[in-house]
Length: 238
Image 1: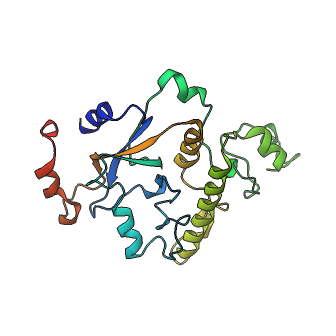
Image 2 (image 1 turned 60 degrees about the horizontal axis):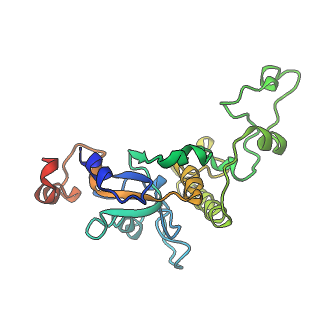
Image 3 (image 1 turned 135 degrees about the horizontal axis):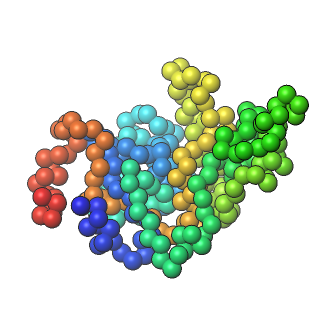
């Protein structure tokens, strides 16, 4: 109910509104899908395009920066380039959402990479049915003709390329506890980001609703701010 109220109250220029998803520690949970206006991927831990600080992902500084997005004290609607949080609503003014021709894709659909020499699971290709006679080869020609390629500005491509490199760096940090067979070989970042970057270049504006919260755990831990929330929440949410 709160989210629908905030959607109704959101400014007309906001085309996509995300819920404020968080965990019981009050840190933004869906960092994987969240990119700030300055191009900072929240999952990485700091804004690489605006400073030279060298901390990433899993230290206290990174966690505190995640907690600051959205800024609940200053921004009712926190402007971002991409978000999700568990729920997002798109406003399809004049059919612009569909006219954009933007689709959910993987990072490998933006940048050509030799991805494990395996066919995409969603493609029904005759070569896969005759593997003994003609083994499937995932080459650049197939990639260009069979995969969907959204249109991006040069700046968006630059930032998307940075995100996949950052993700590979994170995976290398987690090498001691992750099964290497599950690694995305080319740094396939969250599928929301390529889709939202395409829409952003088309003119869409995204924001996170600070007041509409979605908690991922039922445990009401003190650090989650439940007491503060119940004290300050609007009457229409009670």
